Length: 395
Image 1: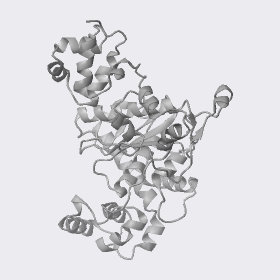
Image 2: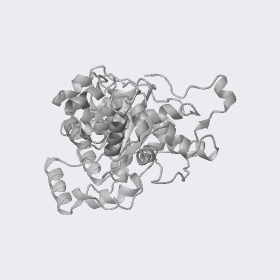
Image 3: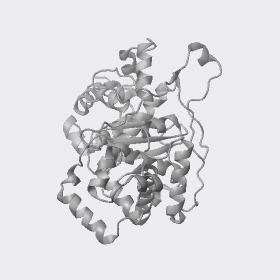
Image 4: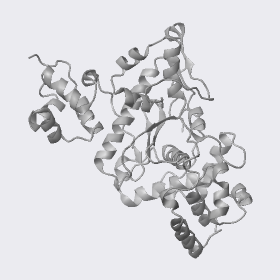
């Protein structure tokens, strides 16, 4: 049998992480030694063609995937919700999806110009430890103003992120400990935010998206090794939570509309404001509308009502969805630039994974959204001057 010339070892390592499979597990599944798996991944040995076929079948990945050149990874830190308590395999699995999303974006960059990166300048202390609540609230107000948001409830968060040049995707993380993650990509010069589909309600997803926005605005220059420091990590998470709270519940408007700092009073605002009651309790505490004892009693009542497992309206409020990547794929097919088969051939990932990364419906490519259309490049434009798809690091 012939050798699989052109096999990319890094893809095998990536595939294992995508499926949360150890080298020893894969060796047993394929019928080779652990040493052989290691040699395949380090490209010290080329597997046989039939071995690649078995690997492809066992890991449910297209055979062509293992012959696709791997892209260089970004060196900026990835910010994970619950990083310190999440199992390493879960982070590895999610990080592979981030890299697949980048490959999807890289492919679409040949055809589209998206909104240029347009985020406000960040004027925060250089040392994370010196960033205070007032700094964070000022930044939140500046972002709302920059986005042209009227006083009161914050409109569609994902739409505003995409209008600002931030790319967003939603995936099934398949682990309770990871709700969302993000990275400022130097390769593309833009932030990328990945949200979890697993258990996030519409209101939780909005909060998570803004939480990640703060990370890419304020923390992207933090050295990755500092994230391993539990105290530093918690500080940055608290800062991102505060930013999301300030963005969603600006002090004056929220206090004016909250008729009483009670569970029922907060619940009456939930649908209009797009914010969970839990987040409102925390905000009321920060605004001194609740003292320590009142806050404790409220959380006890919150638990007694069973809301920790799900608040009222969580099942009926529709989650916001990303638009730009989805419409990009749809437009390529609608305008017959590429067929669905061409698209899948160019990006040899599992079809279901591609649909999820692009926020397509399972098994179909339909569904328009009322948001800015990506600008399809013509063949003439490609040969001349075009507006760059991605902006530089302006901040």
